[in-house]
Image (cartoon, rainbow, N blue to C red; front, side, top):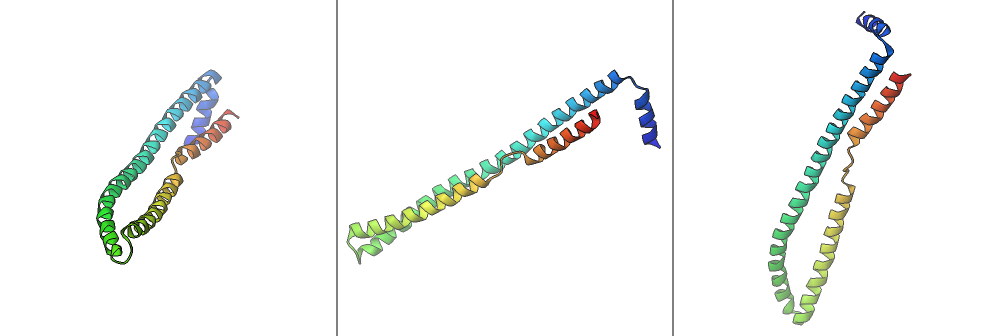
Length: 135
């Protein structure tokens, strides 16, 4: 019943008023979509920033521990191999492990979705709605 009253009130309004209302609503909609995009991008940036921070701090702590452990391994291997051979062997193993870890972290960061997908979808829906309203 209310919908019929809305349709009748729309029929009695001048076309200029209807287009004015449509322009106002579209302007409000665009402002809301921009605000949504800002919030969505801020959330994703915060997520990536926090994890990059953890990666840096964790790497620094692990580096200190790794140096101590590697010194012990080199000393242990030096009893079986020449000093230079023990250091070279440990260095190669550490380089391979480091390369693998860096590659894994880079892949994870590249796969992080930074585009505001929800905003893009609602903008598509809004465009469809606006086309229907103009018809």
